[in-house]
Length: 245
Ligand code: NAD
Image 1 (cartoon, rainbow, N blue to C red):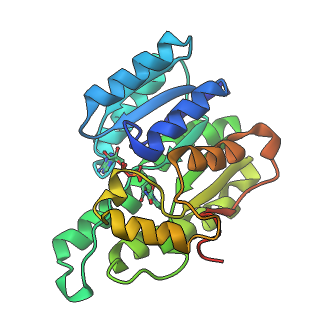
Image 2 (cartoon, helix red, strand yellow; image 1 turned 90 degrees about the vertical axis):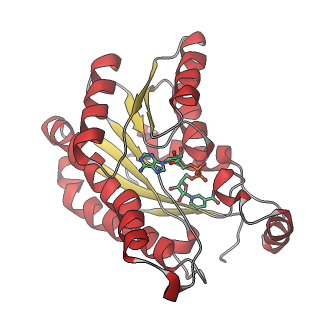
């Protein structure tokens, strides 16, 4: 299959860095976006101006029909089926468990977990037919260990690890690799709500002495995407500067 990648939630933050990195490595990239199509379009234009192939498409990953349609739209524009899927779109909110509403619980699972199911089922038929492909799910260190006041988020991210390992086994006979990146604290809009003081103390608690960058996570995704990593499947790569060691 041609090197065509689709990244969800790629208009900003970690997803944006992944799109830039994969494009630099010769992938044509579908940039999935929910709200900020202006940013997604600007990124696609920036990549195209460097001679790389990119297209921005809009959909809510929680909406199966919408995200499946958006993936088909990206495939039409990029000229082939998705060979590499990166499930990056995600939401996070901090609540004490007694304040978690049914609506919030359902929404965070709908985006972080159902979203991955929808995209995987959208790209799998081609991958199964071609007997090749690669899927990378973006989990979190909070899916590996507990996070106080983030039980819902942590549960969704742990679910992605279970999904990764099970699918890796199920799809291995079809030569489809499924891996997972578990980022530590990465400097993006998602963590700005924590405030400078908390972020500084999290950096201090990190053995490598700093917070991660979106490019650090793009590096981990690029490792799994590389065809030379053809013996890596079902793995969870923690990219956290040693935070949870
Ligand atoms: P971010 O908020 O900047 O990016 C999240 C992206 O997902 C945004 O572009 C957003 O529009 C998109 N998105 C949200 N809901 C969506 C939906 N329903 N449909 C489609 N797109 C949707 O945050 P980020 O830090 O870049 O996060 C990227 C991923 O990395 C997330 O899955 C997040 O959980 C994970 N992560 C982040 C950190 C961190 O410290 N920043 C740590 C661990 C894991």
